[in-house]
Length: 295
Length: 258
Ligand SMILES: Nc1ncnc2c1ncn2[C@@H]1O[C@H](COP(=O)(O)OP(=O)(O)O)[C@@H](O)[C@H]1O
Ligand SMILES: [Mg+2]
Image 1 (cartoon, helix red, strand yellow):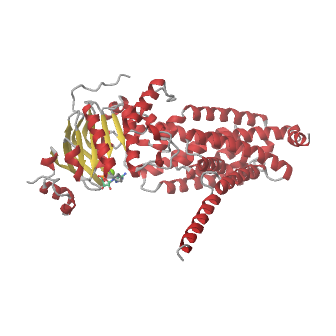
Image 2 (tube, rainbow over the protein chains, first blue to last red):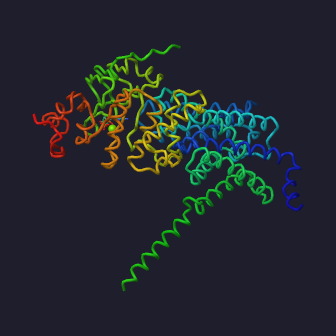
Image 3 (spheres, protein in one colour):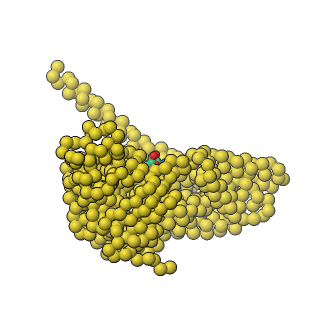
Protein backbone atom coordinates (compact mmCIF):
# COMPACT_ATOMS: atom_id res chain seq x y z
CA UNK A 1 0.00 0.00 0.00
CA UNK A 2 2.77 2.39 1.02
CA UNK A 3 4.62 1.85 -2.18
CA UNK A 4 1.49 2.25 -4.29
CA UNK A 5 0.84 5.58 -2.62
CA UNK A 6 4.43 6.51 -3.13
CA UNK A 7 4.17 5.73 -6.82
CA UNK A 8 0.83 7.40 -7.45
CA UNK A 9 1.22 10.50 -5.31
CA UNK A 10 3.16 12.48 -7.94
CA UNK A 11 0.73 11.48 -10.68
CA UNK A 12 -2.17 13.39 -9.12
CA UNK A 13 -0.43 16.47 -10.45
CA UNK A 14 -1.21 16.82 -14.15
CA UNK A 15 2.11 18.51 -14.82
CA UNK A 16 4.01 15.55 -13.43
CA UNK A 17 2.08 13.09 -15.55
CA UNK A 18 2.89 15.17 -18.60
CA UNK A 19 6.53 15.36 -17.56
CA UNK A 20 6.62 11.62 -17.18
CA UNK A 21 5.13 11.09 -20.66
CA UNK A 22 7.52 13.53 -22.32
CA UNK A 23 10.51 12.02 -20.58
CA UNK A 24 9.56 8.43 -21.37
CA UNK A 25 8.98 9.31 -25.05
CA UNK A 26 12.28 11.17 -25.26
CA UNK A 27 14.08 8.34 -23.48
CA UNK A 28 12.72 5.68 -25.83
CA UNK A 29 13.57 7.57 -29.03
CA UNK A 30 16.99 8.75 -27.97
CA UNK A 31 17.88 5.33 -26.58
CA UNK A 32 17.11 3.78 -29.97
CA UNK A 33 18.96 6.40 -32.01
CA UNK A 34 21.88 6.24 -29.59
CA UNK A 35 22.71 2.69 -30.67
CA UNK A 36 23.44 3.79 -34.24
CA UNK A 37 25.01 7.07 -33.19
CA UNK A 38 27.75 5.48 -31.12
CA UNK A 39 28.41 2.77 -33.72
CA UNK A 40 28.74 5.39 -36.47
CA UNK A 41 31.20 7.29 -34.25
CA UNK A 42 28.91 10.30 -34.35
CA UNK A 43 28.85 11.28 -30.66
CA UNK A 44 30.33 14.68 -31.44
CA UNK A 45 27.77 15.16 -34.21
CA UNK A 46 25.06 14.54 -31.59
CA UNK A 47 26.65 17.17 -29.36
CA UNK A 48 26.80 19.59 -32.28
CA UNK A 49 23.20 19.18 -33.40
CA UNK A 50 21.88 19.52 -29.88
CA UNK A 51 23.72 22.81 -29.30
CA UNK A 52 23.03 24.16 -32.76
CA UNK A 53 19.25 24.13 -32.27
CA UNK A 54 19.45 26.94 -29.69
CA UNK A 55 18.81 29.85 -32.10
CA UNK A 56 15.95 27.88 -33.63
CA UNK A 57 14.29 27.39 -30.26
CA UNK A 58 14.85 31.04 -29.31
CA UNK A 59 13.38 32.33 -32.58
CA UNK A 60 10.43 29.97 -32.27
CA UNK A 61 9.64 31.40 -28.84
CA UNK A 62 9.94 34.96 -30.10
CA UNK A 63 7.69 34.42 -33.11
CA UNK A 64 5.28 32.11 -31.34
CA UNK A 65 6.05 29.15 -33.61
CA UNK A 66 6.15 25.56 -32.41
CA UNK A 67 9.58 25.07 -30.83
CA UNK A 68 10.04 21.83 -32.79
CA UNK A 69 9.93 23.65 -36.13
CA UNK A 70 12.66 26.11 -35.14
CA UNK A 71 14.78 23.43 -33.56
CA UNK A 72 14.52 21.09 -36.52
CA UNK A 73 15.34 23.79 -39.05
CA UNK A 74 18.51 24.76 -37.19
CA UNK A 75 19.46 21.16 -36.39
CA UNK A 76 19.20 20.11 -40.01
CA UNK A 77 20.81 23.39 -41.09
CA UNK A 78 23.79 22.73 -38.82
CA UNK A 79 24.23 19.27 -40.35
CA UNK A 80 24.16 20.76 -43.86
CA UNK A 81 26.65 23.49 -42.91
CA UNK A 82 29.01 20.96 -41.35
CA UNK A 83 28.80 18.85 -44.49
CA UNK A 84 29.49 21.90 -46.65
CA UNK A 85 32.54 23.01 -44.63
CA UNK A 86 33.87 19.47 -44.61
CA UNK A 87 33.51 18.85 -48.32
CA UNK A 88 34.91 22.19 -49.46
CA UNK A 89 37.98 22.30 -47.20
CA UNK A 90 40.59 19.83 -46.02
CA UNK A 91 39.65 20.39 -42.39
CA UNK A 92 39.08 17.27 -40.31
CA UNK A 93 35.46 16.37 -39.62
CA UNK A 94 35.55 17.23 -35.91
CA UNK A 95 37.02 20.64 -36.68
CA UNK A 96 34.17 21.48 -39.06
CA UNK A 97 31.70 20.31 -36.42
CA UNK A 98 33.34 22.41 -33.70
CA UNK A 99 33.35 25.60 -35.74
CA UNK A 100 29.74 25.33 -36.87
CA UNK A 101 28.01 24.35 -33.67
CA UNK A 102 29.77 26.83 -31.39
CA UNK A 103 28.91 29.60 -33.85
CA UNK A 104 25.25 28.63 -33.89
CA UNK A 105 25.13 28.22 -30.12
CA UNK A 106 26.62 31.68 -29.64
CA UNK A 107 24.11 33.08 -32.14
CA UNK A 108 21.33 31.59 -30.03
CA UNK A 109 22.72 33.12 -26.84
CA UNK A 110 22.97 36.49 -28.58
CA UNK A 111 19.33 36.33 -29.71
CA UNK A 112 18.15 35.47 -26.22
CA UNK A 113 20.17 38.26 -24.63
CA UNK A 114 18.49 40.81 -26.94
CA UNK A 115 14.92 39.72 -26.31
CA UNK A 116 12.53 40.57 -23.49
CA UNK A 117 12.32 38.25 -20.54
CA UNK A 118 9.52 35.96 -21.73
CA UNK A 119 12.12 33.70 -23.28
CA UNK A 120 13.67 32.08 -20.30
CA UNK A 121 17.24 31.06 -21.10
CA UNK A 122 17.29 28.79 -18.09
CA UNK A 123 14.32 26.81 -19.41
CA UNK A 124 15.70 26.46 -22.90
CA UNK A 125 19.14 25.40 -21.78
CA UNK A 126 18.18 23.13 -18.94
CA UNK A 127 14.72 22.02 -19.92
CA UNK A 128 11.36 22.79 -18.41
CA UNK A 129 9.70 19.47 -18.45
CA UNK A 130 7.47 20.35 -15.49
CA UNK A 131 6.06 23.28 -17.45
CA UNK A 132 5.28 21.39 -20.65
CA UNK A 133 2.01 22.48 -22.26
CA UNK A 134 -0.46 20.11 -23.85
CA UNK A 135 0.46 21.10 -27.45
CA UNK A 136 4.13 20.60 -26.62
CA UNK A 137 3.36 17.19 -25.17
CA UNK A 138 1.51 16.25 -28.35
CA UNK A 139 4.39 17.46 -30.54
CA UNK A 140 6.82 15.33 -28.57
CA UNK A 141 4.62 12.25 -28.71
CA UNK A 142 3.94 12.52 -32.44
CA UNK A 143 7.53 13.34 -33.42
CA UNK A 144 8.81 10.66 -31.09
CA UNK A 145 6.50 8.02 -32.54
CA UNK A 146 7.38 8.94 -36.13
CA UNK A 147 11.13 8.95 -35.43
CA UNK A 148 11.02 5.63 -33.62
CA UNK A 149 8.87 4.05 -36.35
CA UNK A 150 11.25 5.13 -39.13
CA UNK A 151 14.29 4.01 -37.13
CA UNK A 152 12.82 0.58 -36.53
CA UNK A 153 11.58 0.19 -40.10
CA UNK A 154 14.98 1.06 -41.57
CA UNK A 155 17.01 -0.53 -38.80
CA UNK A 156 18.68 -3.17 -40.98
CA UNK A 157 19.85 -0.63 -43.54
CA UNK A 158 21.10 1.73 -40.85
CA UNK A 159 23.02 -1.05 -39.14
CA UNK A 160 24.57 -2.06 -42.45
CA UNK A 161 25.49 1.58 -43.09
CA UNK A 162 27.26 1.76 -39.73
CA UNK A 163 28.99 -1.60 -40.16
CA UNK A 164 30.06 -1.61 -43.81
CA UNK A 165 29.26 1.43 -45.90
CA UNK A 166 31.21 0.08 -48.88
CA UNK A 167 29.18 -3.11 -49.03
CA UNK A 168 25.98 -1.08 -48.70
CA UNK A 169 27.12 0.93 -51.71
CA UNK A 170 28.25 -2.15 -53.65
CA UNK A 171 24.84 -3.80 -53.41
CA UNK A 172 23.12 -0.75 -54.77
CA UNK A 173 21.86 0.98 -51.60
CA UNK A 174 21.93 4.76 -51.64
CA UNK A 175 24.39 5.44 -48.83
CA UNK A 176 24.17 9.22 -49.14
CA UNK A 177 20.43 9.07 -48.70
CA UNK A 178 20.75 6.70 -45.74
CA UNK A 179 23.31 8.99 -44.11
CA UNK A 180 21.00 11.96 -44.62
CA UNK A 181 18.12 9.96 -43.17
CA UNK A 182 20.08 9.12 -40.03
CA UNK A 183 21.14 12.75 -39.62
CA UNK A 184 17.53 13.89 -40.06
CA UNK A 185 16.41 11.40 -37.44
CA UNK A 186 19.18 12.69 -35.18
CA UNK A 187 17.81 16.22 -35.53
CA UNK A 188 14.28 14.99 -34.75
CA UNK A 189 15.54 13.08 -31.72
CA UNK A 190 17.23 16.21 -30.42
CA UNK A 191 13.95 18.10 -30.86
CA UNK A 192 12.13 15.47 -28.83
CA UNK A 193 14.83 15.14 -26.19
CA UNK A 194 15.37 18.80 -25.46
CA UNK A 195 11.84 19.16 -24.11
CA UNK A 196 12.71 16.57 -21.52
CA UNK A 197 16.19 17.54 -20.40
CA UNK A 198 17.09 20.76 -22.21
CA UNK A 199 19.67 21.60 -24.82
CA UNK A 200 22.74 21.17 -22.66
CA UNK A 201 21.92 17.68 -21.44
CA UNK A 202 20.16 16.21 -24.45
CA UNK A 203 23.50 14.96 -25.76
CA UNK A 204 23.71 12.66 -22.73
CA UNK A 205 20.48 11.02 -23.86
CA UNK A 206 22.04 10.49 -27.29
CA UNK A 207 25.22 8.81 -26.10
CA UNK A 208 24.89 7.18 -22.68
CA UNK A 209 22.07 4.70 -23.50
CA UNK A 210 23.89 3.18 -26.49
CA UNK A 211 27.17 3.11 -24.57
CA UNK A 212 25.56 1.24 -21.67
CA UNK A 213 23.85 -1.27 -23.95
CA UNK A 214 27.05 -1.79 -25.97
CA UNK A 215 28.80 -2.94 -22.80
CA UNK A 216 26.07 -5.50 -22.17
CA UNK A 217 25.70 -7.35 -25.47
CA UNK A 218 27.31 -8.20 -28.78
CA UNK A 219 24.04 -8.54 -30.68
CA UNK A 220 22.56 -5.43 -32.27
CA UNK A 221 18.86 -6.24 -31.83
CA UNK A 222 19.48 -7.04 -28.18
CA UNK A 223 21.49 -3.84 -27.83
CA UNK A 224 18.52 -1.87 -29.13
CA UNK A 225 16.12 -3.58 -26.74
CA UNK A 226 18.42 -3.21 -23.73
CA UNK A 227 19.10 0.41 -24.54
CA UNK A 228 15.42 1.33 -24.74
CA UNK A 229 14.39 -0.69 -21.67
CA UNK A 230 17.16 0.58 -19.42
CA UNK A 231 16.80 4.18 -20.54
CA UNK A 232 13.03 4.32 -20.10
CA UNK A 233 13.35 2.73 -16.66
CA UNK A 234 16.10 5.14 -15.67
CA UNK A 235 14.06 8.07 -16.97
CA UNK A 236 11.08 7.09 -14.82
CA UNK A 237 13.36 6.60 -11.82
CA UNK A 238 14.86 10.01 -12.54
CA UNK A 239 11.46 11.72 -12.54
CA UNK A 240 10.49 10.15 -9.20
CA UNK A 241 13.87 11.00 -7.72
CA UNK A 242 13.47 14.57 -8.83
CA UNK A 243 10.02 14.74 -7.19
CA UNK A 244 11.00 13.21 -3.87
CA UNK A 245 14.46 14.72 -3.60
CA UNK A 246 13.39 18.02 -5.12
CA UNK A 247 16.21 18.26 -7.65
CA UNK A 248 16.18 19.52 -11.24
CA UNK A 249 14.28 17.03 -13.39
CA UNK A 250 16.57 17.07 -16.42
CA UNK A 251 19.64 16.63 -14.24
CA UNK A 252 17.99 13.86 -12.29
CA UNK A 253 17.04 11.93 -15.46
CA UNK A 254 20.52 12.23 -16.94
CA UNK A 255 22.14 11.29 -13.62
CA UNK A 256 19.97 8.17 -13.51
CA UNK A 257 21.29 7.17 -16.97
CA UNK A 258 24.84 7.88 -15.86
CA UNK A 259 24.42 5.77 -12.72
CA UNK A 260 23.21 2.83 -14.79
CA UNK A 261 26.23 3.25 -17.04
CA UNK A 262 28.51 3.33 -14.01
CA UNK A 263 26.94 0.18 -12.57
CA UNK A 264 27.31 -1.66 -15.90
CA UNK A 265 30.85 -0.38 -16.33
CA UNK A 266 31.82 -1.65 -12.90
CA UNK A 267 29.67 -4.75 -12.55
CA UNK A 268 28.47 -5.66 -16.04
CA UNK A 269 28.46 -9.45 -16.47
CA UNK A 270 30.45 -9.36 -19.70
CA UNK A 271 33.28 -6.98 -19.05
CA UNK A 272 32.66 -5.22 -15.74
CA UNK A 273 35.98 -3.87 -14.61
CA UNK A 274 35.49 -5.25 -11.10
CA UNK A 275 35.47 -8.76 -12.51
CA UNK A 276 38.41 -7.99 -14.77
CA UNK A 277 40.30 -6.74 -11.75
CA UNK A 278 39.44 -9.84 -9.70
CA UNK A 279 40.47 -12.14 -12.54
CA UNK A 280 43.79 -10.35 -12.79
CA UNK A 281 44.32 -10.65 -9.03
CA UNK A 282 43.42 -14.33 -9.11
CA UNK A 283 45.89 -14.94 -11.92
CA UNK A 284 48.58 -13.05 -10.09
CA UNK A 285 47.92 -15.15 -6.96
CA UNK A 286 48.13 -18.37 -8.96
CA UNK A 287 51.43 -17.39 -10.54
CA UNK A 288 52.78 -16.43 -7.10
CA UNK A 289 51.84 -19.89 -5.83
CA UNK A 290 53.59 -21.49 -8.79
CA UNK A 291 56.70 -19.55 -7.98
CA UNK A 292 56.62 -20.83 -4.41
CA UNK A 293 56.24 -24.53 -5.23
CA UNK A 294 59.80 -25.23 -6.38
CA UNK A 295 61.22 -23.32 -3.43
CA UNK B 1 13.22 3.01 -64.52
CA UNK B 2 14.57 0.15 -66.53
CA UNK B 3 17.96 -1.21 -65.64
CA UNK B 4 20.41 -2.22 -68.27
CA UNK B 5 20.98 -5.91 -68.28
CA UNK B 6 24.34 -7.54 -67.85
CA UNK B 7 25.67 -8.66 -71.22
CA UNK B 8 26.12 -12.41 -71.44
CA UNK B 9 29.60 -13.31 -72.61
CA UNK B 10 30.97 -9.85 -71.81
CA UNK B 11 34.24 -9.47 -69.96
CA UNK B 12 33.69 -9.45 -66.22
CA UNK B 13 35.87 -6.37 -65.94
CA UNK B 14 36.57 -3.92 -68.73
CA UNK B 15 38.45 -0.82 -67.68
CA UNK B 16 39.85 1.58 -70.22
CA UNK B 17 42.12 4.60 -69.78
CA UNK B 18 41.09 4.95 -66.16
CA UNK B 19 42.50 7.76 -64.11
CA UNK B 20 41.63 8.33 -60.46
CA UNK B 21 42.98 11.10 -58.24
CA UNK B 22 42.46 12.05 -54.61
CA UNK B 23 42.86 15.81 -54.47
CA UNK B 24 46.43 16.14 -55.74
CA UNK B 25 47.50 12.50 -55.41
CA UNK B 26 47.12 10.49 -58.60
CA UNK B 27 46.28 6.95 -57.49
CA UNK B 28 45.71 5.40 -60.92
CA UNK B 29 46.42 6.52 -64.48
CA UNK B 30 46.29 4.97 -67.94
CA UNK B 31 44.77 1.84 -66.48
CA UNK B 32 43.25 -0.39 -69.13
CA UNK B 33 42.51 -3.98 -68.24
CA UNK B 34 40.07 -6.67 -69.24
CA UNK B 35 39.38 -9.71 -67.16
CA UNK B 36 37.37 -12.50 -68.75
CA UNK B 37 34.52 -14.07 -66.83
CA UNK B 38 35.26 -17.26 -64.87
CA UNK B 39 38.87 -16.43 -64.06
CA UNK B 40 40.80 -15.79 -60.89
CA UNK B 41 42.91 -12.71 -61.40
CA UNK B 42 45.57 -11.64 -58.93
CA UNK B 43 46.13 -7.92 -58.42
CA UNK B 44 49.70 -7.41 -57.27
CA UNK B 45 51.41 -4.27 -56.09
CA UNK B 46 53.13 -2.65 -53.13
CA UNK B 47 51.21 -0.67 -50.53
CA UNK B 48 49.94 2.50 -52.10
CA UNK B 49 50.12 1.15 -55.64
CA UNK B 50 46.38 1.68 -56.13
CA UNK B 51 44.89 -1.78 -55.56
CA UNK B 52 42.14 -0.65 -53.22
CA UNK B 53 41.48 2.36 -55.42
CA UNK B 54 40.95 0.10 -58.42
CA UNK B 55 38.41 -1.91 -56.41
CA UNK B 56 36.64 1.28 -55.45
CA UNK B 57 36.57 2.40 -59.08
CA UNK B 58 35.03 -0.93 -60.08
CA UNK B 59 32.25 -0.33 -57.56
CA UNK B 60 31.85 3.29 -58.61
CA UNK B 61 32.86 4.35 -55.11
CA UNK B 62 35.48 6.82 -56.30
CA UNK B 63 34.90 9.18 -59.18
CA UNK B 64 37.13 8.55 -62.19
CA UNK B 65 38.80 11.68 -63.55
CA UNK B 66 38.64 10.05 -66.95
CA UNK B 67 38.15 6.65 -68.51
CA UNK B 68 35.39 4.08 -68.36
CA UNK B 69 34.55 1.06 -66.26
CA UNK B 70 32.25 -1.76 -67.35
CA UNK B 71 31.24 -4.75 -65.24
CA UNK B 72 29.78 -7.55 -67.38
CA UNK B 73 29.11 -4.84 -69.94
CA UNK B 74 27.22 -2.56 -67.55
CA UNK B 75 28.18 0.73 -65.91
CA UNK B 76 29.12 0.34 -62.20
CA UNK B 77 25.87 1.96 -61.11
CA UNK B 78 23.78 -0.57 -63.02
CA UNK B 79 26.04 -3.44 -62.04
CA UNK B 80 25.47 -2.54 -58.38
CA UNK B 81 21.72 -2.44 -58.82
CA UNK B 82 21.89 -5.83 -60.52
CA UNK B 83 23.82 -7.26 -57.56
CA UNK B 84 26.74 -8.17 -59.82
CA UNK B 85 29.59 -7.10 -57.52
CA UNK B 86 30.56 -8.32 -54.10
CA UNK B 87 33.35 -6.85 -52.02
CA UNK B 88 35.42 -8.35 -49.23
CA UNK B 89 37.09 -5.45 -47.39
CA UNK B 90 40.64 -5.26 -46.07
CA UNK B 91 40.79 -6.41 -42.44
CA UNK B 92 41.75 -2.94 -41.21
CA UNK B 93 38.64 -1.42 -42.77
CA UNK B 94 36.28 -3.50 -40.62
CA UNK B 95 35.08 -2.60 -37.12
CA UNK B 96 35.59 -5.99 -35.46
CA UNK B 97 33.88 -4.88 -32.22
CA UNK B 98 30.61 -4.16 -34.04
CA UNK B 99 27.67 -6.02 -32.47
CA UNK B 100 26.76 -8.25 -35.41
CA UNK B 101 26.98 -12.02 -35.63
CA UNK B 102 28.58 -14.01 -38.42
CA UNK B 103 25.12 -14.90 -39.63
CA UNK B 104 24.03 -11.23 -39.59
CA UNK B 105 27.01 -10.35 -41.78
CA UNK B 106 26.22 -13.09 -44.29
CA UNK B 107 22.57 -11.99 -44.36
CA UNK B 108 23.74 -8.51 -45.39
CA UNK B 109 24.66 -10.13 -48.71
CA UNK B 110 20.94 -10.58 -49.38
CA UNK B 111 19.84 -6.99 -48.70
CA UNK B 112 20.19 -5.86 -52.31
CA UNK B 113 17.42 -8.21 -53.39
CA UNK B 114 15.12 -7.54 -50.42
CA UNK B 115 12.31 -5.05 -49.89
CA UNK B 116 12.82 -1.65 -48.20
CA UNK B 117 12.78 -3.02 -44.64
CA UNK B 118 15.17 -5.86 -45.64
CA UNK B 119 13.10 -8.39 -43.76
CA UNK B 120 14.50 -11.76 -44.80
CA UNK B 121 12.26 -14.33 -46.52
CA UNK B 122 12.65 -18.09 -46.10
CA UNK B 123 14.61 -18.22 -49.37
CA UNK B 124 17.11 -15.72 -47.94
CA UNK B 125 17.56 -17.73 -44.76
CA UNK B 126 18.17 -20.78 -46.91
CA UNK B 127 20.75 -18.93 -49.03
CA UNK B 128 22.54 -17.75 -45.89
CA UNK B 129 22.52 -21.24 -44.41
CA UNK B 130 23.92 -22.66 -47.64
CA UNK B 131 26.66 -20.01 -47.80
CA UNK B 132 27.65 -20.68 -44.19
CA UNK B 133 27.75 -24.38 -44.92
CA UNK B 134 29.86 -23.72 -47.96
CA UNK B 135 32.60 -21.90 -46.03
CA UNK B 136 32.38 -24.18 -43.01
CA UNK B 137 31.12 -21.61 -40.51
CA UNK B 138 27.79 -23.20 -39.56
CA UNK B 139 28.97 -23.96 -36.03
CA UNK B 140 30.28 -20.44 -35.51
CA UNK B 141 27.37 -18.54 -37.08
CA UNK B 142 26.12 -17.08 -33.81
CA UNK B 143 29.53 -15.74 -32.79
CA UNK B 144 30.12 -12.02 -32.87
CA UNK B 145 32.12 -11.27 -36.03
CA UNK B 146 35.27 -10.27 -34.11
CA UNK B 147 35.31 -13.56 -32.19
CA UNK B 148 36.75 -15.38 -35.19
CA UNK B 149 40.30 -16.08 -36.34
CA UNK B 150 41.75 -14.17 -39.29
CA UNK B 151 40.94 -16.93 -41.77
CA UNK B 152 37.42 -17.44 -40.41
CA UNK B 153 36.73 -13.70 -40.66
CA UNK B 154 37.65 -13.80 -44.34
CA UNK B 155 35.45 -16.83 -44.88
CA UNK B 156 32.53 -15.02 -43.26
CA UNK B 157 32.85 -12.17 -45.75
CA UNK B 158 33.29 -14.56 -48.66
CA UNK B 159 30.09 -16.28 -47.48
CA UNK B 160 28.39 -12.89 -47.68
CA UNK B 161 29.46 -12.70 -51.34
CA UNK B 162 28.20 -16.24 -51.95
CA UNK B 163 24.86 -15.41 -50.36
CA UNK B 164 24.68 -12.31 -52.54
CA UNK B 165 25.25 -14.52 -55.59
CA UNK B 166 27.28 -11.83 -57.35
CA UNK B 167 29.13 -12.78 -60.53
CA UNK B 168 32.22 -10.76 -59.61
CA UNK B 169 33.97 -11.07 -56.26
CA UNK B 170 36.47 -8.41 -55.27
CA UNK B 171 38.76 -9.45 -52.44
CA UNK B 172 41.08 -6.85 -50.94
CA UNK B 173 44.10 -8.52 -49.33
CA UNK B 174 42.28 -11.67 -48.18
CA UNK B 175 45.52 -13.37 -47.16
CA UNK B 176 46.81 -10.63 -44.86
CA UNK B 177 46.93 -11.92 -41.29
CA UNK B 178 45.84 -15.41 -42.33
CA UNK B 179 47.87 -18.54 -41.55
CA UNK B 180 49.09 -20.93 -44.25
CA UNK B 181 46.43 -23.58 -43.60
CA UNK B 182 43.61 -21.03 -43.87
CA UNK B 183 45.21 -19.57 -46.97
CA UNK B 184 45.16 -23.01 -48.60
CA UNK B 185 41.50 -23.41 -47.60
CA UNK B 186 40.59 -20.03 -49.07
CA UNK B 187 42.51 -20.82 -52.26
CA UNK B 188 40.57 -24.01 -52.88
CA UNK B 189 37.29 -22.22 -52.05
CA UNK B 190 38.10 -19.53 -54.63
CA UNK B 191 38.89 -22.16 -57.25
CA UNK B 192 35.61 -23.95 -56.61
CA UNK B 193 33.74 -20.67 -56.96
CA UNK B 194 35.59 -19.97 -60.22
CA UNK B 195 34.62 -23.41 -61.51
CA UNK B 196 31.00 -22.58 -60.71
CA UNK B 197 31.21 -19.50 -62.92
CA UNK B 198 32.35 -16.69 -60.61
CA UNK B 199 35.01 -14.18 -61.53
CA UNK B 200 37.42 -13.33 -58.75
CA UNK B 201 39.75 -10.37 -58.51
CA UNK B 202 42.02 -10.72 -55.52
CA UNK B 203 44.63 -8.21 -54.40
CA UNK B 204 47.65 -9.44 -52.52
CA UNK B 205 51.27 -8.73 -51.94
CA UNK B 206 51.97 -12.35 -51.14
CA UNK B 207 53.66 -13.40 -54.37
CA UNK B 208 54.27 -16.96 -53.25
CA UNK B 209 50.64 -17.94 -53.53
CA UNK B 210 49.95 -16.36 -56.92
CA UNK B 211 50.88 -19.17 -59.37
CA UNK B 212 48.97 -21.66 -57.26
CA UNK B 213 45.82 -19.49 -57.02
CA UNK B 214 45.55 -17.32 -60.10
CA UNK B 215 44.77 -17.90 -63.74
CA UNK B 216 46.22 -14.52 -64.53
CA UNK B 217 47.88 -11.64 -62.74
CA UNK B 218 47.97 -7.87 -62.99
CA UNK B 219 51.03 -6.04 -61.75
CA UNK B 220 49.96 -2.58 -60.64
CA UNK B 221 51.93 0.47 -59.73
CA UNK B 222 49.68 3.43 -60.44
CA UNK B 223 49.66 2.01 -63.98
CA UNK B 224 49.38 -1.55 -65.18
CA UNK B 225 52.98 -2.76 -65.49
CA UNK B 226 52.14 -6.22 -66.72
CA UNK B 227 49.06 -8.38 -67.25
CA UNK B 228 48.92 -11.99 -68.31
CA UNK B 229 49.58 -15.50 -67.09
CA UNK B 230 51.29 -15.50 -63.68
CA UNK B 231 54.55 -16.92 -64.98
CA UNK B 232 54.85 -14.23 -67.63
CA UNK B 233 53.95 -11.45 -65.23
CA UNK B 234 56.13 -12.45 -62.29
CA UNK B 235 59.46 -11.95 -64.03
CA UNK B 236 62.46 -10.41 -62.34
CA UNK B 237 62.29 -7.25 -64.44
CA UNK B 238 58.59 -6.75 -63.77
CA UNK B 239 58.95 -7.35 -60.06
CA UNK B 240 61.88 -4.97 -59.91
CA UNK B 241 59.66 -2.35 -61.51
CA UNK B 242 56.77 -2.97 -59.15
CA UNK B 243 58.59 -3.69 -55.93
CA UNK B 244 61.77 -1.68 -56.36
CA UNK B 245 64.80 -3.56 -55.18
CA UNK B 246 63.00 -5.82 -52.74
CA UNK B 247 63.50 -8.86 -54.95
CA UNK B 248 64.89 -10.87 -52.06
CA UNK B 249 61.33 -10.90 -50.65
CA UNK B 250 60.23 -13.06 -53.54
CA UNK B 251 60.39 -16.71 -52.52
CA UNK B 252 62.51 -19.03 -54.65
CA UNK B 253 60.82 -20.84 -57.48
CA UNK B 254 57.75 -18.63 -57.51
CA UNK B 255 58.77 -16.10 -60.06
CA UNK B 256 59.50 -16.55 -63.72
CA UNK B 257 62.98 -17.21 -64.99
CA UNK B 258 63.27 -14.70 -67.77
N1 LIG C 1 40.89 8.52 -49.30
C1 LIG C 1 42.08 8.88 -49.80
N2 LIG C 1 42.46 10.18 -49.81
C2 LIG C 1 43.66 10.56 -50.30
N3 LIG C 1 44.56 9.71 -50.83
C3 LIG C 1 44.26 8.40 -50.86
C4 LIG C 1 43.01 7.92 -50.33
N4 LIG C 1 42.98 6.56 -50.49
C5 LIG C 1 44.15 6.24 -51.07
N5 LIG C 1 44.91 7.33 -51.29
C6 LIG C 1 46.24 7.35 -51.94
O1 LIG C 1 46.12 6.72 -53.19
C7 LIG C 1 47.21 5.86 -53.45
C8 LIG C 1 46.71 4.44 -53.66
O2 LIG C 1 46.16 3.92 -52.46
P1 LIG C 1 45.44 2.51 -52.35
O3 LIG C 1 44.52 2.37 -53.49
O4 LIG C 1 44.88 2.41 -50.99
O5 LIG C 1 46.68 1.52 -52.53
P2 LIG C 1 46.83 -0.01 -52.07
O6 LIG C 1 45.47 -0.57 -51.78
O7 LIG C 1 47.51 -0.66 -53.21
O8 LIG C 1 47.70 0.00 -50.84
C9 LIG C 1 48.13 6.00 -52.24
O9 LIG C 1 49.11 6.94 -52.58
C10 LIG C 1 47.25 6.51 -51.18
O10 LIG C 1 47.97 7.28 -50.26
MG1 LIG D 1 44.75 -1.43 -50.07
